[in-house]
Image: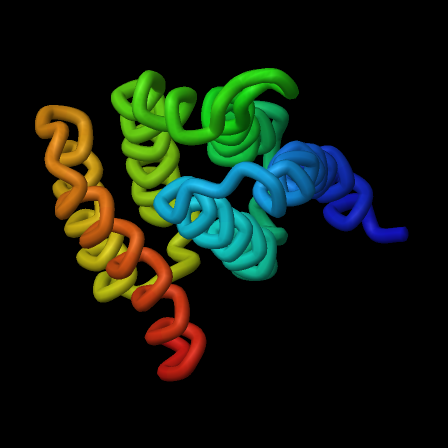
Length: 172
């Protein structure tokens, strides 16, 4: 196993734990569904998969130094924290939990997006177009934090999922 592949295990484990945490609530959604939570749950799954896929462009930087490695661990750590805040406890109502923790969820999502933008400048892993897309997502996340209007959350979700599929289709 190459050393970068070995270093990638911890990175991947954090995303895997986050996806496992998300999946625990999918069973609950069969009985107690809230459409916005369900949609965001699917969106977060796509974001995790997309970030794991995008790690291939950053792999060569994992073994540069421990500082680089630690810096690269920030997005998966933030994503795991995001999913932990996003996911209700077993006995909690999904809708109430989501609406009560909305500001925390979108604040952590904002930090996640910003950390990916910052890392991309150090690793040159993406084109400027992708960081422009991330910047727009950051602005929408701020709107979700400061406003209780559902339209901003819906726009961000559509934008994030649409952006993933656009990038995947055009390989920006």
